[in-house]
Length: 182
Image 1 (spheres, rainbow, N blue to C red):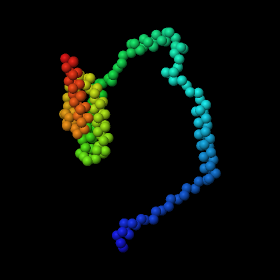
Image 2 (image 1 turned 90 degrees about the vertical axis):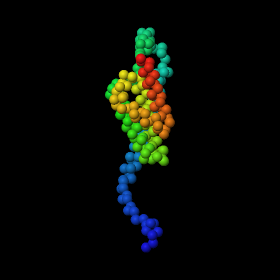
Image 3 (image 1 turned 60 degrees about the horizontal axis):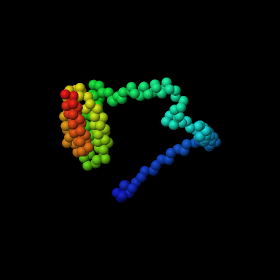
Image 4 (image 1 turned 45 degrees about the vertical axis):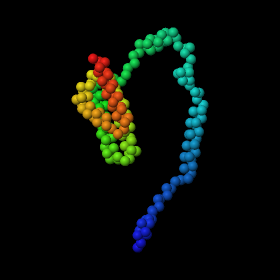
């Protein structure tokens, strides 16, 4: 036997059993489906388009309601993201996981950036999320206790300059907030 014959050999493929479907039943089902689709389309077209809140006239609002809305808007305080100890620990844990994953992927596929691109994006996203840590100087001792600082300093030598720059910005913001607090 020739080697090429062996390599070209393809075993016979078994044919699948044909599914026996009653054609009358299939045609009836198809007709019902078409009718349902036609009814749904007709009902969507028949409905009047409701005006959006931004296009509704404000004439029907009474003076009391206007005063109440104005009072609410004036007294409303904008709140940023509230951070507590558990949220901080969760952010730090996610950061450590994503940093480790990125490091592993870069070691595993050093010549294939498309393989570690997703982990780069995840790492960059968690670094953006960590910006709120700079506004919570009360939790800086906890950050030190959780040993985040060495991990952040490691990223200063990261191959992706966006990540290194992000670390530098966070460090500067933390220093500025600390100085302003004193």
